[in-house]
Image 1 (cartoon, rainbow, N blue to C red):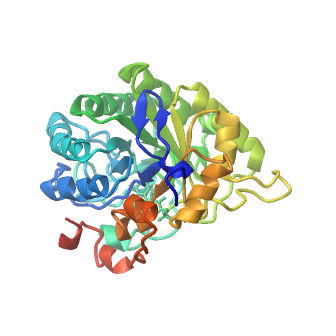
Image 2 (tube, protein in one colour):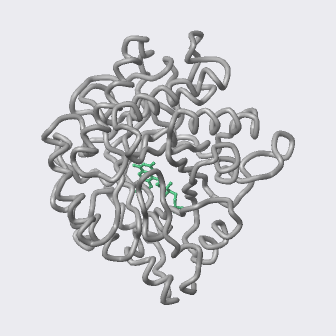
Length: 366
Ligand SMILES: Cc1cc2nc3c(=O)[nH]c(=O)nc-3n(C[C@H](O)[C@H](O)[C@H](O)COP(=O)(O)O)c2cc1C
């Protein structure tokens, strides 16, 4: 990498200016208290990425309400003042080390496997999730059968996302990212086989993306125009890696255009391999999901998925198919990835042992 590499150029997403285009991808580490309160370990863990040169840190998925949104035991929340205030030292530590930090808002829906506040789970429809609960987040066996969420609950959920976003703004976060990806509740609405509703939230792609659009609008209305709001979108899910949108590029057009029109400042796409064609050749012209988000959304795009080599990361930006890259596992192995990449130093391989037997933050990560 050279000093004029695209990765090292500053960029603006909404009102937020980033010093470079290298982000830490959101990663759940179940290291909060039982009540969802962020801890000092989390403060030190996040600050290390900032000290290592990342321009942006997207936090782990954080639950917005004390109802059905929590997905995992010891996951952090931002559903009350105590949880919100506990994030403030994390934000300050990251800022002091020169990076920006965006909070990811996540409602687990039918994939909830540990909720300290409520029994049972909800989803767009009573469809049992595929696959098995995640062992490294303390789960075992099949997912529970969710209850179909009511229209009143949908309005409440939308409002709860917006209120949580406001708490994040007050706590000093530089923005919020709405988790519309990876199989959690908003993605359950977007996905044809988990959403069997016959009302305005089910059926066509326009109907299935409606809740994501309403949540984005509600968040935008609550935080005002001068605050960064993003949305993460994927095809694959933690319990179904290979899912593809049935109408390929046509779905991408509807989804990305509508989300951008709802007022998001950026789209964050995640694929197993960000540089691979998103759909088959029969229903697309062979582009990547990030490329479609840029083309149809016309807002800055964060691309994620196997971009850990500086060559791959620079290439996707140089091709104009994304504006920022987010690193997951490679960032865990290299908290100073931006410095190493800039100085052409070798990178460490990611070792899954750091997430075993449970995914909580290990002493070596502090
Ligand atoms: C331990 C772990 C926790 C994760 N938690 C989240 C999460 O809370 N929210 C989210 O959107 N993605 C989450 N992801 C997915 C990552 O953000 C990312 O999409 C994935 O690791 C692929 O990127 P990579 O190839 O750079 O690792 C998680 C991934 C890992 C490895």
